[in-house]
Length: 162
Image (cartoon, rainbow, N blue to C red; front, side, top):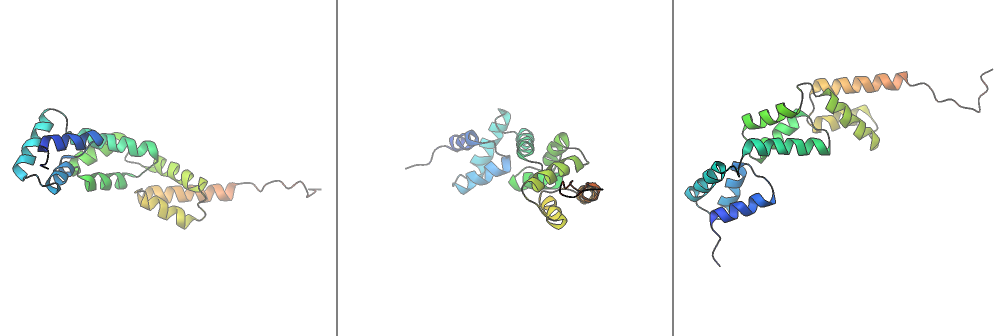
């Protein structure tokens, strides 16, 4: 059985989910299409607006942040790993996050604590894996420690204060 034309295979892959140019190029090469045919196909798809790295990067960041909070470093690394250029990745992340990722780190910390996070060390590692800046991690840990020390002791009705 012969293989479908490169454009058909590219359209099939794009119908499943948006791809970055480099990502789609790699997949088509793996399927045996030659470099010239792939380049021509991808150029044509870009001209038609069907392949757009900036739009794909923006959608990726929005989708990730809807699901759960991530830091800028993690978002950038994932975009580049998937095939976005560094400039495109940075623009997408800059457009949807603040330079100061402390608010997102707070949201991630709350989520972690609701799931049973127990120690400051585990929280710090969790936030680090999520790609938050050291400044954000330190701020969140300091706030958590301050809340813990400021929390009043629960009232015990069995003890008579008099």
